[in-house]
Length: 117
Image 1: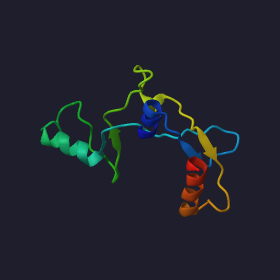
Image 2: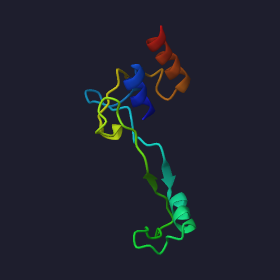
Image 3: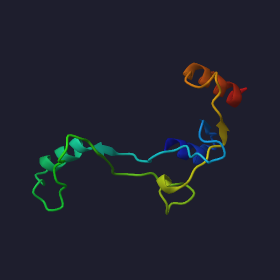
């Protein structure tokens, strides 16, 4: 969400590394401002004494977790569509090299040179 809004509002460049050659790669994931874990959702339901409400979710039957996205961000360009559902391609894309693969320091130095020199 942050990357998309920065691009829309301030025309920032987004650079990514990797991906399958010849195929597009999007640079964002799920957009959202308020994401709650299952424990938080269940706690809120119990605190509000709504556990017996027919619309309340059932207890999890496994030892697990889930997240729920309560809010999303909307594009400045199209307020009818949440940015989570808009394809975004990066302005710059670089392949990994033997020097940058599995070496975060070299990756950042490479990105700095390409983006700011």
